[in-house]
Length: 236
Image 1 (cartoon, helix red, strand yellow):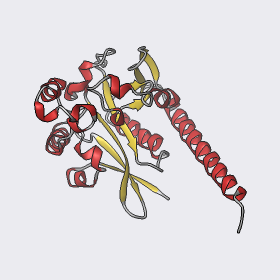
Image 2 (cartoon, one colour; image 1 turned 90 degrees about the horizontal axis):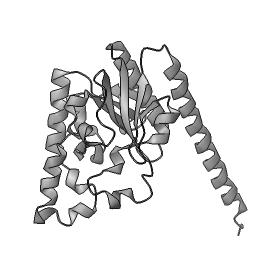
Image 3 (spheres, helix red, strand yellow; image 1 turned 135 degrees about the horizontal axis):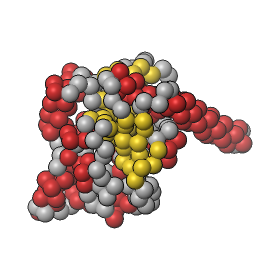
């Protein structure tokens, strides 16, 4: 399955995966979310960690404003056969990301663009490093000095149940950022902040290629394991 990387434009917004199109975890002021959680209609939604962040209208408005005033703010990975979006990477100046100032490792450095999220649909993990490559290439051409990102540690160990105001689907694993060449600049047991310098030649490229190779190897091992289990099944 081949992947094509394209920049998000406004007509392409409706083609985004459902969660990506509707989630405004990064794009809406957390104070607004806190007010919503205090209302009876969101009493049950608070435990889902995703419904409270859903507003397709606000997400489209945020994208539209950035495209008009700043330029490209997302890269899309499109599956070549069905032309389906299977991965996304969003980024913006930190001042345009309300959530950015509410992490324990905030603020983002003033010379950096904030990479808010890289997500890939199930079965397309290889899209993540390719999307990062596209983000880096775009920002280098625009003269940006660095990219920063908030990672998450322990996204699968029930943290969403402990922190209501959190969408783990829209956070990047800290290990992915480290494997992709980002440097740790603000340690934290849950939400470390990372930085990737863009004025140090092409060192980032080898890191991204290494992360992609790691994903390919892991996928190959998983396929081999599945085939061995199938071969071991009794016939007849």
